[in-house]
Image 1 (cartoon, rainbow, N blue to C red):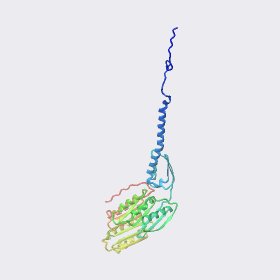
Image 2: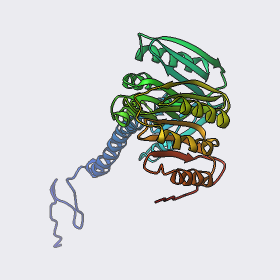
Image 3: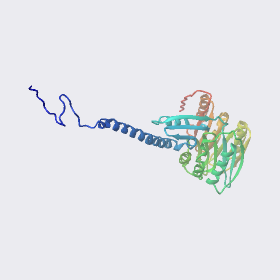
Image 4: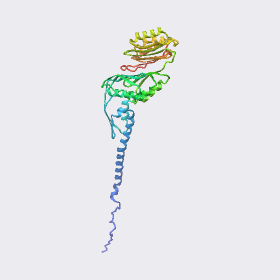
Length: 364
């Protein structure tokens, strides 16, 4: 027999059989590496993204401390929770928060609708006279900030305390603003919810600068009605009047007794009760311009929150009327009296119950 046998030996593979030297465990390495990479990214994002969100939320709320006190960041979630008096810019701030990338906003705020606050502060040489309607917490804050700004003055107050009254927007930063207004003579500040009216006199043309400094000191955006004027130079007729629901406060200087009597009589006929004083000053050159302004007073009877100040050369009128027709009549009367270049009318139309109206008036 010619049978042939070939010895395979201990290491010879069988025909048609292959053998691999790669460890089977190595085939799972790419999958393991990919899983670790994904896990690392998840861990990174879970730590870094909430930190970024918290930082951006903190930055957005820096100018809104009242809102910041009700904001709670939990990971990617921002919860706004609590009761708050709505203030100007609040909805815009919440809108910017909602647009932060990766943030989930949960707005649970209860928006209150309290009665509007009111405060009126007058400063003389030795004291501050404070009147109005505030809640107890805000009243304490106003008094404290007045003491901070004017520590050398005493405070007399007739403020009605009502807990249901809302918080003034201008309250935060008031002390710094009052300190900036220290140079103003006969300073008077009248505040509502988000609006301040500044009255008084300064010896130069720094009125606008003082109002800007006052606005910059406040935390929230506040509408400031600046009625601070330059002091009357000697030798000119002086007129200052302020009208409200209680009557007219009038201070003036005239050359003749006849003009003083006419001024007092006209003011009483138009506005009713008049308090204040009219002084005679023989150094005044002429009462002519004052007489023309006197003829304008009947047209100003319908102006709410009226204030008029002048030095015989220039007169400024502030106030509010309910319609553009009324404003047009006042402008026409100023023109008829030849006071177009003398009287600066800053009367505005303010009627919250009517649609917006644009009125353009031009005379001469």
